[in-house]
Amino acid sequence: MNTEFFNKWTSQLKKGTLSFMVLSILKDKGEYYGYDLINEVKKRTTIEIAEGTLYPLMNRLKEEKLVESKWVEQNSGIPRKYYTITDSGLAVVKEMTQYWNHLNQTINSI
Amino acid sequence: MNTEFFNKWTSQLKKGTLSFMVLSILKDKGEYYGYDLINEVKKRTTIEIAEGTLYPLMNRLKEEKLVESKWVEQNSGIPRKYYTITDSGLAVVKEMTQYWNHLNQTINSI
DNA sequence: GCGATGTACTTTGTTATACTATGTATTTGT
DNA sequence: ACAAATACATAGTATAACAAAGTACATCGC
Image (cartoon, rainbow over all chains, first blue to last red; front, side):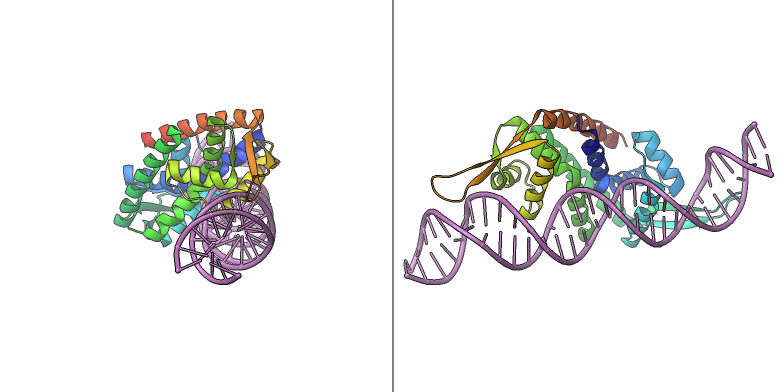
């Protein structure tokens, strides 16, 4: 099997699915901070998100007003930036879910 | 809903899924030429592939030896470049299918 | 016969996103 | 004291979709 092509493919497949997964997770359960999201996705899906991928992604989602963030000081350690999904984010993730299901059906029908 | 973001998202989602769909279609039924593939995907999935997307995609698949092509002269009109999937392509599309199903399951489980 | 439309392939430039690498700063374990 | 883990950020690179434009032949309507 062409492993190199396959690995590139899984990377390309993330373009789109990552934002979908992150929004879905935030929809499912209120608050996450970035570093935690990486671990949560890894735990739930065995998919590794590089830090250099997630932080810019969260900034994009924030610019699009799909998520909001707030800094939370810790009793000890580095402050965390917590994200919550907005109403607009909920509407988008709903459309995404529909589109994804439709896509999955058509792919399976091939 | 943030329509602009959603449209960008569906475009990003194609990165990966298009090659998967094309290989799946070729696996399913022997021979297609580029222009025909665009219409076939449109018919089967309601997804529009720009010509400037498909032709470079087919070239990449050929470079990776996942497909082969041959020119076929027509009695009238422009010659067509017909594509067939290779053994390597079959192996890759098998892995892709497995990965896709796994991804779909984990996304649905969120 | 001529312009518009459809068929069929190609290429160039733009844009979006994932990834690698690097950097900063704090805390915990040994 | 040093390594590893926690937590965020950014710069540079690679990849792939897309719009736009070009080439070339065929057909259809007028």
